Length: 187
Image 1 (spheres, rainbow, N blue to C red):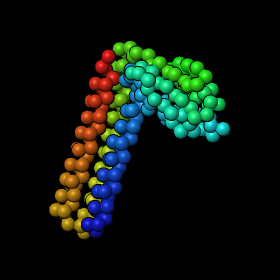
Image 2: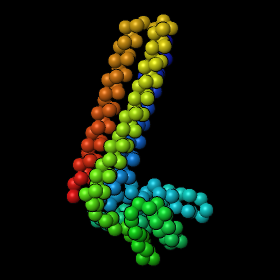
Image 3: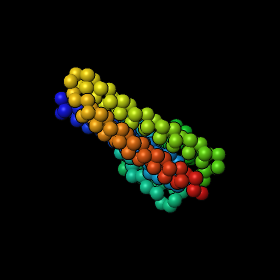
C-alpha cells in the first residue's frame, strides 16, 4: 500500500512540474516590448498543405531588441509565413524583403503593458489551479488508503508532504509571475 501512496505522490509531483513548465512556456509567449523568437515560434504555417510550427520551417532570431528576423529554409515559405503572422493577429506587421521576413516589435503602451500583466497573472492562476488539482487527487487517494487500512499517522505525514510540495510549487509560480511582471513593466 505504501508503494501506491508514494506513486500517487510522485504523480502529483509530476503534475505540478508540468503545470510550472507549461506556465514558463506560456509566459515566454507574452509580449514584453522586446523581440523574442517565442513570440512567433509556435505560430502554425501552411507547409505544403500541412500546418507546421514556424520554428520547424524557418530560423527565427533577433537582430536587435525590437526586431525579429525569420529566415525560411525554403524561399517559397516567405508568403505563407507572412500570412500566418497576419492571421495570428498579434499586432505585428511583417516585412518581406525577398530573403527574410522582418518584424519590428512596436513599443508597448502603458495600457497594453497592464493588459499583458493581467494575462500573465491569469496564466499563473491557471497553473495554481492545476497544482491544486494534483494535490487534491493525491490527498483523496491517501484518505481512501487510510480508510482501507493504511496507518493514520503515515497518512497524515504523507498529506503533509503533499501540502509542502503544493506550497513549493505555488511559490515557483508566484516567482515566475513576479519576474514576468517586472519584465513587462520595464520600459
